[in-house]
Length: 469
Ligand SMILES: Cc1cc2nc3c(=O)[nH]c(=O)nc-3n(C[C@H](O)[C@H](O)[C@H](O)COP(=O)(O)OP(=O)(O)OC[C@H]3O[C@@H](n4cnc5c(N)ncnc54)[C@H](O)[C@@H]3O)c2cc1C
Image (cartoon, rainbow, N blue to C red; front, side, top):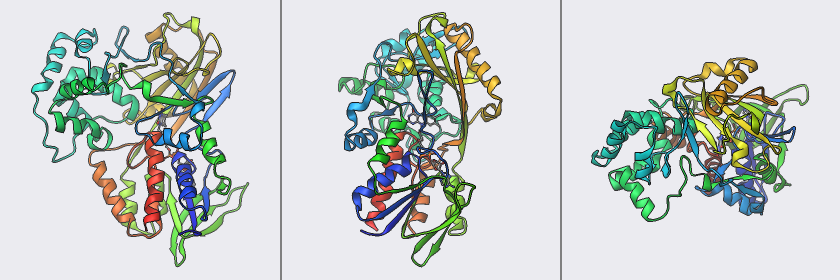
């Protein structure tokens, strides 16, 4: 393996992490990364404009699991990481009329402060009674997967699901809750139900152990972002790999098995002629659908299974506004919108309330998320219409007045993998089929986690499996 050739297709965080771990594990190997775009980092793109630091997709990563923070440690960059601003470290929930904070201590579905839930004006008295009855609900035997909607309504009742759980989870997965797999996306809650019989009890235990942080909504205290934006992570990794051959504008068309291992064919473009590359080892760090297309003539069954992993699209509408254009002072991290309200925006994130240096003094950087699995048609609306929707949402939630100074619309088509019921078994099967092909590995956000740490881990595991061959 030592001096062999390794080619990685896809220059997103997964492919770059695979290159990082491969370089460490096999310093003699010739490593090439092929990326179809001109830019590196896949969906991770930071733009600087008019004093704003604008994230086109992810704006932070969690420190649990530790893979992202660990890679920053390896790179000696932890001093360059920002923690979130602690002023009002929580998310708010929109109602028809106003917004209210997510009850303190509620981490997606883990309640660690019952008083705060019982006090929230977001829920009716009947919903609070039903919530408290969660402790009496028998746990599932988990002989089969369960959807988010089924799990959450079974445990907490419909109103708690619709008002709190759906928007909290929807903001992360932009998924159809009828199809979203609990086992593939929220295995920790499955494990808590199995272990404690109830999530209220699990929350009590977590609180006792002081594991649960005192923040509402997502666990913001565990989030980090590079000072100069998420693209720094991409740059740090690439700069640490001077021997790796990074080839952008290299759009892979197909892969084939040859006696020496694998042959990759890239399509030509005006700026670069097509080429055929032979390699002993191959990591496909593209989406499952794209990797399936590459493998069609190599293994039709594997290609078919990969094709089953669907991806949703979303649009990010970015607005730069003056703080005094807000009708009320708002220093929360974001506002989530329950889908029962039938509004166009899924969630609004206030980037400059989360991290320093995201907006000039007196300005606010806002990002509104539109589309997802349930409203994919919205992504194709023109920029003007999408900006109008975002402005309307801000008018409703925080009394925004006037026009934004800066606007951007970013569309991510088929970039949000959907972990449907049975996803874990599907991925187990895909990995078994992949193991039939020596020197081939699949990695990326389509399989075992969509967050940046999971993608880094996926790149690391692909290299580990190659080393074990
Ligand atoms: C709007 C949005 C917000 C998000 N927010 C967060 C967040 O706050 N925190 C977090 O942890 N995660 C977040 N995520 C998720 C996370 O950013 C992604 O899951 C992760 O970056 C995906 O990395 P990847 O390398 O697996 O895939 P990608 O970034 O999609 O990279 C795949 C690469 O393959 C290349 N490619 C495709 N086809 C070919 C081909 N034929 N030949 C060569 N190359 C090809 C693509 O150009 C691309 O560069 C967010 C995602 C989105 C879309």
